[in-house]
Image 1 (cartoon, rainbow, N blue to C red):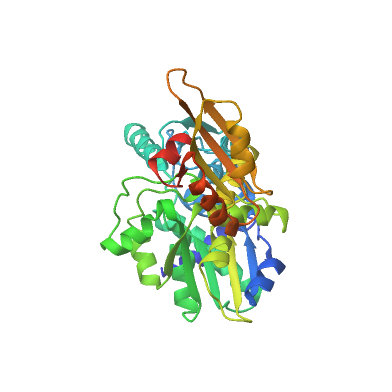
Image 2: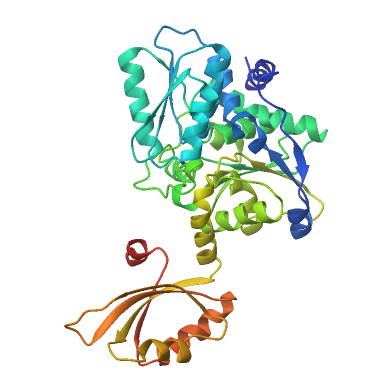
Length: 411
């Protein structure tokens, strides 16, 4: 059976199980780019992510023993597996890393309705995957890969088929978020076979670019470390099956900074009224910051998930402000004498600069005391003037730059 036939068969299996998610014009990005930008709203899918498509397609074709099914997940795949197990009457087990937001953990248990056991262990998705594989080997449970299985990939590919049916024709550009590569492998391969003129772009978080590393190395490689903030796409190693499919699809691959993702998450929420998780905002964040499209082109951004824990918004705002150059941190050595802080406020800070953090450690046996000072400015271009005043000040001031060891330790 050809891949196109596998995708069509998957679509038939998913009929009545997965939703046909909306394809909506986004006015904000259409005006910004001059193109006609559409959002494919997989954040409105069952489980608030596209992952159900692959999980159900695999499980509905599998014969089970008493050991049931097991999977590893950063959160969304686990929800898809949980719902599929419930629909099919299968006992399941879902391993998630400790970095998985509480909201996703709760939804896995809610969607499984007693058919799924949740196991929280490991620091990354890859740790959870190793534990799931160990359980499958020990018990005979069927392993349900999040991306690296032909049935999973074909299920994810139904997103591309659905976009074409809704548009009534081929888009000029499709932008797809990338973790392990299942969604890009499915959508990219289907589009290559049917509409090769469509430009397909895969987007990875800058701190977890495993597919780009695989393309550069000629095969999947294990990243030495990943930034787990974009938890739905923070995969240390691209799939063995997804890699050649992505490579052969002709898709472009690029990265987007986590701070840019946060800025887009806030715009999606405040302007468009869309709650997106970090991975869900990858595609549209890349269109804003990294991708050039032609006026009047039809562009589809795939919003892959909407499982964002409200408690994470403080970090989202923080990362966005730092990325846009509006928030900076400094180590300031203050003389231990009256009026030192007042002089700093009067002589160094501008009229619109705001102190948002001040942590001071007084040391009685020294003439100075160090403080960590966070300052928020109104415009990014105001930073040069602020730094110039700091250098002219008699105080010893050090900028704590994002990405440095000191920044990760202090902030």
